[in-house]
Image (cartoon, rainbow, N blue to C red; front, side, top):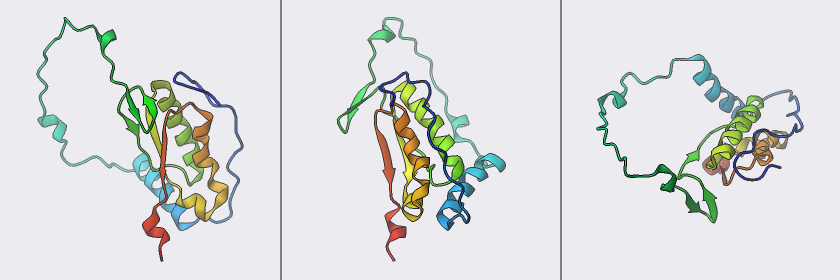
Length: 151
């Protein structure tokens, strides 16, 4: 396991085993990613085009003296950012989470792996989430999708 920012790659870990029939949760997670990869999901109007930033140079400030790090849940983050995701719980989720974990580790920010409900339904999907342990992500979040678990 790598520790701290700057970790560049994960050791090889076991592959997600092939499964005969994907669950509805697993299919839904894969659909979320496939929509982004295959469809035009841009908004009809980009409100950022309405924003004009006024350049105000601050030459008297030494950027090396600027510290945006924070302590959150007892963990030091280099910036108050979380890479939030809905990945994990389907085959391609492992690769996506590995890439996001690598980035989070390199810049020292928190990361979310998304709902682990798919792994509760199919324990063999656990590696699609656990891959983040191979990196030095300072803080990892997950959720369970509890409303869907209650009959």
